[in-house]
Image (cartoon, rainbow, N blue to C red; front, side, top):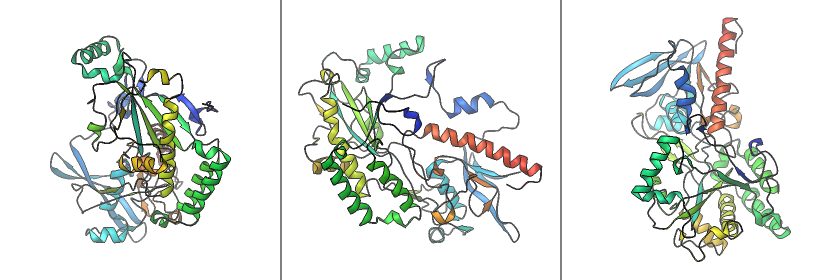
Length: 435
C-alpha cells in the first residue's frame, strides 16, 4: 500500500506498519506491570511500606510567612479509620491523570472559583489544575473472516476456552498469549494528493486560523496547535494509530464489557482507529469537598472540529486496507460487518459513525502539565507543584501533550526520571545546595 516502515517506530517519528512490543515477561509469559516489575522485587525492603484498603483524602498544606505553602503530609482513611501521615522530606503524588488533579483541588490547589464553589480553602490559586486532559480517543469496525479461520472469538466455546486455559497453564502457549500486536501509523491518505493538500489548507484555515475553541483559553494551546499543525502538514508524520486484533468488537456499545464481548456467532478481525495527537482538550474537576465523590470528567472528545475531520477520513480508509491482499483473502466475501449498520460511503456518514461510536483508549494524561505557570503549567521541570514546597506529581498527568503511542512506557520513563530527581534533590539538601 506504499506505506513502508520508514524509521524505528520507537523513535517518535515514523509511519507504516509494524509489530509493537507487549508488556509480557518472556521468562514466564505473564503480563508485566508496575507491580511485578518495580514493586515486587523490592517489596521486602525495611524502609518501604504499602498500605492497602487505604484512601488518601487530601494533602496537608500549611502557609508560612517565610516559606509560603508547604506540604507536610497526607490525611488518609485506612479501613474506615482517619489518620494523618507526616512526611519527613516531601509528598509525592502518583494518583494518575484523574485523581492527581482531584487530590490537588481537594487540598486547596486549583482554580479559586472551583474551590470556593465547593467550600475548599484556597491555598494556591492555579486555574490550570485539571485542565488539558487528553486521550487517544478511538473508534473502529470489525470484518467477518472466512470459515475455518481461527480467531479469539472461538473462546466462546467452553471446550475451547478450557483447552486454551490448559495450554497456557501447562506451557504458556495458545490463544491466551495473543494480543493486539499489529499496528500502523499513517498520515491522512487523502491529504497526500495535490487536491488533498488544498483541502487540508482549507481545513486548517477554517478551524485553526478562524475558529478558536474554548480550550484555547489555556495559554499553551497556541503552541500545542502549532506543533499539531506541522504534523498534519508533513507527509512523513502520522496522525492516527491503527491497531488490528483477531476478535470482534462492538463500537456501538456504551460499556467496555459490552464493547469487547463475544456476542456474534461468527469469527472476526477488528480495526481500532485512534487519534494519535488530538486537538481536543478536556478537564477533570472536583464535584464536592470529599474524596468519596467522583470528580467530573469531561474528555470533550472530538470537540475540536479538526479531530473529527481527521478521524472520519482515516475510518474511510479502513475498507481499502481490508480489501488489499494478503488480508483480503482472509475476509469473507459479503461477510458481516460490525457495527452492523456502519456506513462509510461519504465523509458525512463517516463523521456520524465517529460521533456515535467514539470510545476511550484508557490513556488519560495532561491534567497537571509540566510547563511554566505563564504557559498554563502545574509543575516545574523537576515535577514540583508551582507555589508549593515539598510536593511533586509523578504520573501521566504531567505530560503537556500526549505521546503518540501507548503511554505506558512513557509513564515508566517519567517515574524513573523522577526517582533520579528526588535523589539528586535529597543529596543536594544534605550538601546544603538548594534544588
